[in-house]
Image 1 (spheres, rainbow, N blue to C red):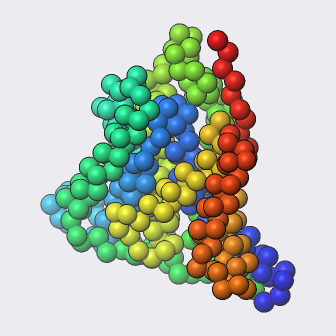
Image 2 (cartoon, one colour; image 1 turned 135 degrees about the vertical axis):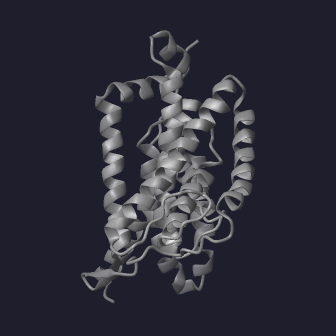
Image 3 (cartoon, one colour; image 1 turned 135 degrees about the horizontal axis):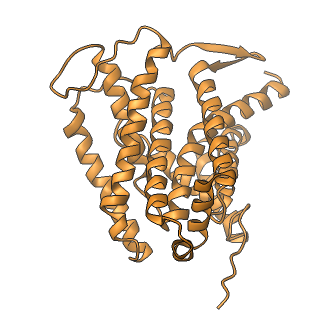
Length: 314
């Protein structure tokens, strides 16, 4: 391949990686901004939805004791029902987590909230095999192996669809954040929850919907990512969640857009570093050196590359 093709290949790889990572990253940031919680269970919320989708696809029309509707896949459009079902399960789970747990722990300290989310990881990890058993075997969507050629580069169709879908979803959310009453409420709660409550904003509804939306975004990320890599387990989303945290720190938690900028830079770095380091036989160390670079960047600019230092007035 020539230099131009190499550059195009890196850009495509970065964009595809960004399509999975951006959804998970925004879910983490949304919860952090509205609930002051670092959600370590974001990946598990997502994989719960992915297991639901996979379960419905795997049944292939077979009726079992769960009573869930079966889906026989004969065309790509029939994937819509199981995907929506997976997203809905994570949406409802996120909603319930806030209303059953975090609504009663909103004034605890940050460490307590983090430990609660760690406990949720253990709980969901144990529940998944109890709910779905060991019969979920899907490793990719039907038709997911189809590719299209773009400037001599093979691009999987479902990954291209994921990129388009994630872009549309995130743009829609940012438009809603800027121009709707819900968006004003989210931004107000993110700025100061107590003051927002005094101004008449229903902070409980904002927090509940934030958790629910974060769950839905995590599910879509997990559903598309597991199809892309061709495998699935309860720990599949761990790497995505770690990268989402790194992206949020790199971009800066002080805004909604900063972490997405960090997610793109991280995705680009994961595409570029292996190619740069292969000359010195250091390709195996690419992720390590990338994370070290992120740490150095944060040491230089603690608020993140796109963040701003928040000054509190007494």
